[in-house]
Image (tube, rainbow, N blue to C red; front, side):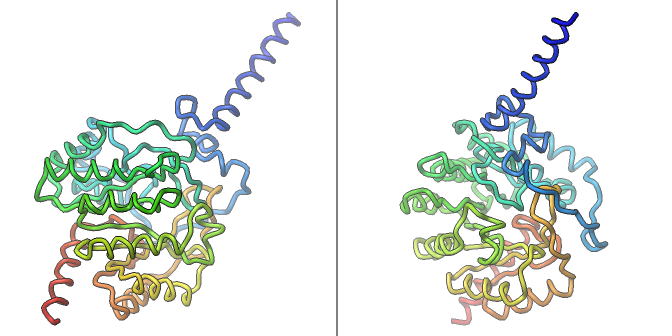
Length: 345
């Protein structure tokens, strides 16, 4: 019996160590991404931050309904990952009920560990060569007039996934020629500058890359990124192909002040960015960056007015604004705004 107790004790120790090893290795085959410690191993030892009660203006209903379930089925049948689910977007119920879902390519595991983000962190799987075709098939089945395609960061790839983005754009164009395509890309920070040309040459209608926050908060909010690199990335897109709309967004409620938000607007306009989104940061778990405060709808309206005054063609600034929220309708307004501007010149 004593020997049995020793064996059981050692067996329990082995299981604990195996769990720790799974976290350390970041191997998707050994991880359960529903367990916070395995989903975010880089955050496991961070102190907890209190999650304040949400104000009435950003509470949403749980996702339900036939439209939502139909969209979910198409995503599952095509074995696709969506940022709506992985990032815990509060608008998923509304968007999916209308058949709108933001595809997230190149897997569900990111090589970065931003403190605001709920995407799993670790070592990603190899790229799926058939994924672009499955995305195109889902776009066709959903009958989308406008699709948003995003991805995890893939610092493990030499081109950061640029060619995979280009293949996905081409596949959607082939299956759904009339669908307009918006991409939300990583920063390609660790790649040769030329990889950006691969994506631009595939001619998405909108090239989005989010700055996420003000430069002063990058060390704590987005430590793996560089503010001016991201800004320059968007500027280069416009230099390569002026016909492509450029878009970027930030979150508020992370600890920024109003002056720093206005400075980001100025920096974006200097980089010739067309479309600005501003939304409220919502803390996914106690291990994530704390919510500094909930910005009021009146303050968001003030940011919108200021941004239009600085020359943006399109602005979406509300508590629930996210990069792809109402993206199709906003793209129509964006295109109309450019046409109006050109008519005046």
